[in-house]
Image (cartoon, rainbow, N blue to C red; front, side, top):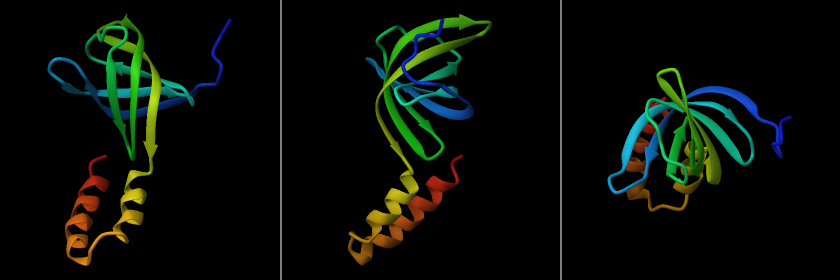
Length: 119
């Protein structure tokens, strides 16, 4: 019996995962499913329960905590409880551009162009 409070939506999106610790580590991974409160990640190494993560996928950045980690063949599947999430980052940067002095707008346009091409 599934005891989740919210339905999970299947996903299959590449992501960069930052594992916070004594020395932060950034590794590639995959978002396998997502809900309003959490997500399922597939990565190449184990992460301990309670570990803090930053997940960067597409135009979103999420912060969360590892609830469980289980081995699946040569990969690891993590259940992550989300704490914070920001979506549509490029659109947000575009809207904020109007609040910056004109001399900084050229630099920001370059950064937004580069961010949009990182997928």
